[in-house]
Image 1 (cartoon, rainbow over the protein chains, first blue to last red):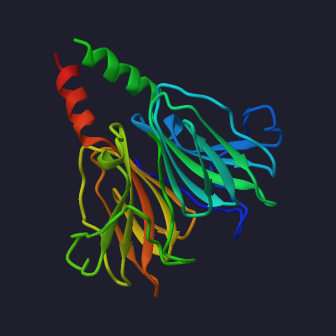
Image 2 (image 1 turned 120 degrees about the vertical axis):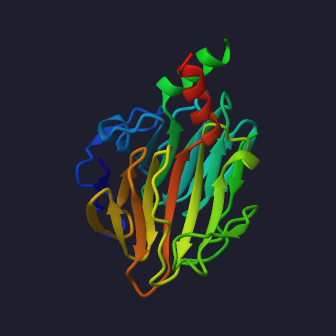
Image 3 (image 1 turned 45 degrees about the horizontal axis):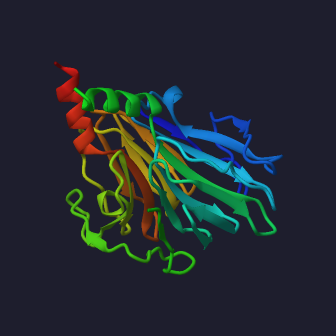
Amino acid sequence: MGVVHKQIGGDRNFAWEGVEAEPYQGGGTSEGSCRHVLIGPKDGAQHFAIRYFEIPPRGQSSFEHHLHDQGVMILKGRARVLLGWEVHEVEPGDIVYIPQNEQHQFENIGDEPLGFLCVIPSKEWLARIQTLGQR
Amino acid sequence: MGVVHKQIGGDRNFAWEGVEAEPYQGGGTSEGSCRHVLIGPKDGAQHFAIRYFEIPPRGQSSFEHHLHDQGVMILKGRARVLLGWEVHEVEPGDIVYIPQNEQHQFENIGDEPLGFLCVIPSKEWLARIQTLGQR
């Protein structure tokens, strides 16, 4: 069955019916950050997940690299993004694609919370693709 | 390498650097609709794609069902959504998950263009995993 999560937070304050905000442990300065899994296993989604992250001013996401690639759309606030060895500034509506294994980090450089969508392939599915692909 | 597509269309008029708007052939009344592939094969993304669709007032997306599931976020306008046998009304910020093989259709019921993000798993990977999984 299809699923609808209504946005109930108001104009610039995102929250969704049927979706809990979880604390998000990002980098060293991510206190007060949170993650909302908008579409994921609870909705029956097996191939990808869509999450919403919110990071307070001066906060950062983890400095990391990993097997899953990521697609990001900035929804509010301003960020500096480290992509490999490049640094970009991004604003609402901007799109960022982070390939597999590329080191990356988001830092909120504005005065309001930084909010962004982040799409990832399902980690289980990715592992299965890798296993099957090696046959 | 990571990719950034800056949003260059202004406040409520989406367009992105490095992304072309393609005509989108939806249902019977989709004239003037378009699709922007924000993240896809051109960016090196193999596991999922993120597209932005825009449908004019009274326009509709295709009435369809298919192997790939879809995750949608409404960005502007108002829509009526058919999900299986259920009908929902959705607005900016609302999230819709459409499972594999569920019939669905979006209709613009507002006065401005309906704009939404749509995430799909890569069709190639989905086909490949089905083929390999059956061995």
